[in-house]
Image (cartoon, rainbow, N blue to C red; front, side):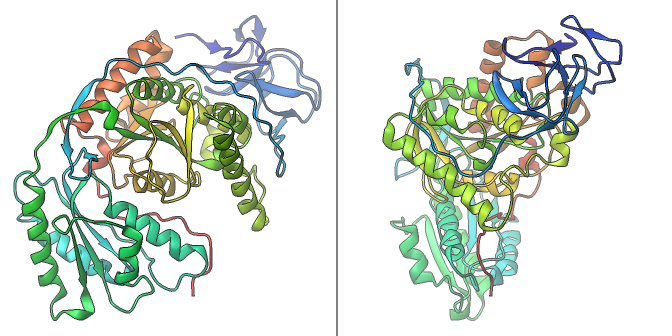
Length: 490
């Protein structure tokens, strides 16, 4: 493996692919101090206030004069981000291409959607019935029929005592799960006195199939657990009638997410997801990119890939509305990156964002989705949600992603309602945490080509979609919903 990499010809930093000791040399530059793996070294002298360039874009500016060979990090590099800005649409899209469509073995649903799992989901309208939902889950999992993968109760603390937009976000989130094709059957479980009244919630769901969706209000029956088990048994009988059959990859909606990023995220795993997204959309499939705060500083790259000016304007609103959300609470828009990110070599939010948006590859941005909106367009959609791993991944599931690709340089065991494939940025974490990581993008640093790794990842995703492979996160409980919240709780 090479000692270092210079990503773009205009960069004034070098990325160390392994620890570089003081006196070591890379690209003809001698290190003035020890530089950790994944961190940046000045490729030349950089004057105070001069921009520091990585990926061919500024990631911040020098807080002091920096000598060639010096370690560049938060002690001498600061973000350039500040407040709301104006944007101009300057289209920079590559021509869309197509390729022959691959297939996977999925579950065709009557509404035209395709599931990659055949589960029964119990959706509480309010947190007060979480315990009841879990009791029904335990009983029914003990006798579920062949062909039903599992029964899952998705617990949460909301559905009542919420003011402002929070209550509406809760309803939209829960309704998105009710409609999700990975659920062969759904029991909507209410209490009876909550704000999220069943009749009103049904309006949020829209149309439903009575065979697939059942409703139960606990206060209206003598034994809610017995009644719930009876309804889930009916749902399991219905779901068991579905069988896997060949489905084109164009029916896949894949969520793109990163978390616990490091200095390699923008070099290996995130570009690999971008290449995957390009391949998927060439076959007519769909990808969703979220984590709006991690677009700050790289947003113009996405804006200029918008399919038209109307989509560009939606992207501008998406970004600026999220900045205003931060500012409403008196928070700086550049508080990211996290301590783990910094330890891994990421210094500023711009640096993190420029790595983050690579998960979308060069795919045309075809739509911008509000929280809880359903993904309907083929291509790349941007989704309103924060950077928090659990909230963002849940948002992707709510909007219809059947599977999520999640890149990480630090490692994480979390799961969400849909299969979540963990992709490591380097081989060390893949080797150390085999119970967490499913795919190793670190091989890109070891002589493997992007084309080769893209094909491998695409094949693995199809095997997961077909039920032939089980990501590590599916072996753990995935019951707790992380619903976005921005308001007052009574």
